[in-house]
Image 1 (cartoon, one colour):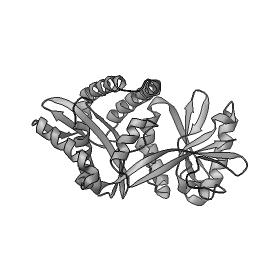
Image 2: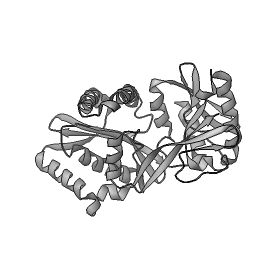
Image 3: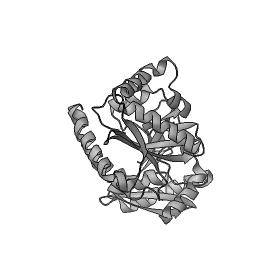
Image 4: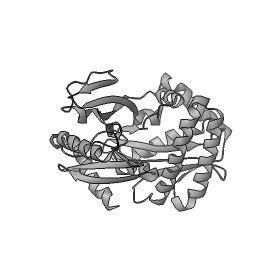
Length: 311
């Protein structure tokens, strides 16, 4: 975990609100692949290897005036290794980092060329909410959420929330995740199923790694029980002084209102523990159903993520 300290020193220079810009988020992502970092032009450069090809999980992290030259150098490293420039790319680039590296950046543009050698493509967005909104659920916008929570509390009198303890809860967390996967596939459009199942293998590995290194990664989590049965769990972390993120949330698909109740309870905990104004719940991974759910909570802002490609 020595690399955690090093990476976090460089992250302080960037200070953006994307959920991808933490050590834990990338460490968990790498549970299904191999990665390495190197310091280039006084910036922290995180590479991922898939097969024999390398790309970057994040842009170079460091002082803004050093990043542009580091990006050019990183592409040289990727091109020298990769069988084709097609594989050379930098993912999860925040717009702030593109400023100065691009010739122009127009709102609403999906893909555009910049300089002579690179293409930038707008990818997914992170959904960011005011923590106060998620806790209080005030007004007509949240009427249905309040109803779902109230129905859940009336239907189940023996609900309790426990702080997540990896050793105590790991077996039932893995069992709930397997149940959630099976239930989710039943209701999923067939055209999304293959992509969903690919992601599940990564998620299973990430959960195992998360539970193994929970304290070292400085994570926060809770488990939701009805009686003695685990019906939900969720884990998050602090991104910076004003925003926290939810890394994962899973509930029993068959218990109506369970997800809404757990989300609200965990939002309270994140707000109180970290004194944050905002909560980032990550992106929708391109799934339409997940997009609808995240939009239904009325995000305060959507933060775009870009990929830079070598031509």
